[in-house]
Amino acid sequence: MKVAKGPIVVQSYHYDLVNPDSEVKTDLQVQVQDYNDSEEIESTEGKMIQIMTPFGIHPEQAPFAISGLIGQVVQLQDVAADEDYTLSTELMEELSRPLVEQIQIITYQLTAMTLDHGYELNFQPNTGDNEDLDD
Image (cartoon, rainbow, N blue to C red):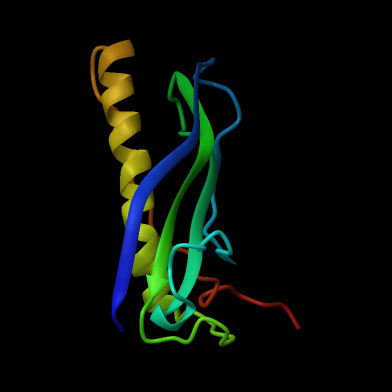
């Protein structure tokens, strides 16, 4: 599928120094919504969506916590603008990966400045496919 991407936009990024014993939190989500602010783009050029990644993270024994929202507008060129379309898991991971990497980059750079060493976040996608269900 042909995809055109807009710039990654950091809508918010919040960093706090916290007690390392504070509750561990790893809340990173990927949300997809139609993007309707596409006046300058012809509707025949493809479906416009916005990938949003809200997050709230406090790694185990880390002296910091972060939260924020990062997003990117994407044009699915092979999908009609008015077509209902559901992203596959693979395409969702592909489109959201640069946003997650941006969170990792910002966090590494900020902790390098504030803690004298960069802290690497390591995220693994959780699609819910491997969850155990009790009957």
